[in-house]
Amino acid sequence: MTTKMHQVRQEFDEPFRDVVAGFAIMGYSRRATAEILDFNLSYFRELCTRFHLHRHFKPQRDMRPECKSRGNGGWPKGKKRPNANRRYSDAYLLELLRKYPRYGDFLARAPVAASTVIRRFRVPWVEIMKMARSGDHAS
Image (cartoon, rainbow, N blue to C red; front, side, top):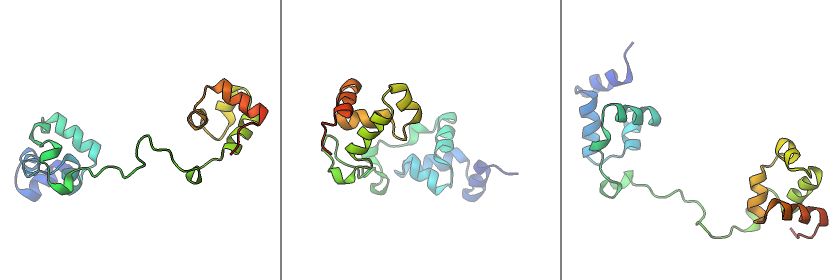
């Protein structure tokens, strides 16, 4: 049985360390190198640590353009999301709070995490419970 490292050595006819260093010097990222060599990324990073190969990789600003992060394309930080994209309506969350009024019960039985409710209403749990009891909050 040959290991992945031996397969790389046979394919490139060079030691594993030299192959990885070569990709790093050419400006490839760790992720790209792992993909090219068909390694699991976490295992590849472990090997880089074990063999002190991190030192060969360039800073992100000096990497090849295709290896630079293009961001996650997610929602801009701090910008409020429109209500249409919410998975749970405010009314549904308040209904769950009425169904499970005790915090421990909510944690154990509600299909939504308490952190979701706290982030949605942006007030302490006690205030959210008051809203649920009174039914003041509009969806």
